Amino acid sequence: MDMEKTTAIILAAGQGTRMKSATPKVMHRVCGLPIVHFGVKAALDAQCTEVVVVVGHGRTMVEEYLARAFGDRVRTAVQQEQRGTGDAARVGLAAADEGADRVLVFYGDVPLLSADELTAVVQPISDRRSPATLSLATCRVDDPTGYGRVLRESGRVTEIREHRDLRSDEERAVREINAGVYAGSASWFREALASLVADNAQGELYITDMVEFAARAGAPIAAVTLSSDALAGVNDRDQLARVEEVMHARLVRSWRLSGATVRAGARIDAGVALGPDVTVEAGAVLRGATRVERGAVIDVGCVLTNVSVGA
Image (tube, rainbow, N blue to C red; front, side, top):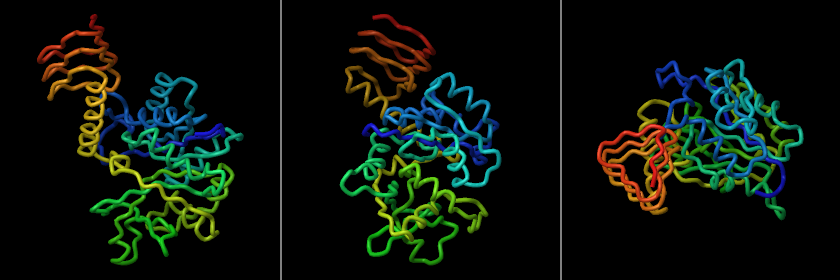
């Protein structure tokens, strides 16, 4: 990103009832780290100058973790009532630095979203020659059931309509779906969020209604297509397991490419570090902040938690 100030607002206030847990959804772990950790890190890696996490259910646990993990690089804002994603974004923007030039908003339950993908969504509003007013991420899937559809007229994005609010079989057949990442100028976001009304089946303020607000004003809207992995949110424990498998595969591939041998069936947390020529055998489990130095072998079945293994 360029030198303009970009505030990332991460929506993480939901209760996550389908998790059937006393633990806030975003505090469930993926490869050893809370779900919310990955979104914050992606925003920081994308060089956002400020990160605001909107919290609600289980806020104390989330706030305490963020303070330990990120210190003053992250602040929180409290959504007192669950009045929808639009209201959550308002809460986050109210807590943001008044000097912010741009706003990037996304959900806190999509741990596979990368810094490069966030940067790609911000880029169209940063184009000096023909900047978009609003940039949003979309994704094409074979089965769009349950997702908000990206509706277009003559190729131009005009609206995002939530699944329960779709009006025809034609709309239900649309396979381009909302990936839940939005970017625009801070001043435009304030205007757009102020325009939201709870005119939908849930009686909530939808952040997606900003798209129609921009389209009706004739404002240029950019749609950035992301991979289906980026969209993979966590709403229940089955989805949590599937996301973790993708994350773990990424971690293992990264360590292999950096010079470590990781056998199939080994499990490695996101906070683990492996030196060159390390071998991790099948069935080994490396957790927490475990460090393994050059040439060491972690043999079959070892379970190491916050352990330092010398060369």
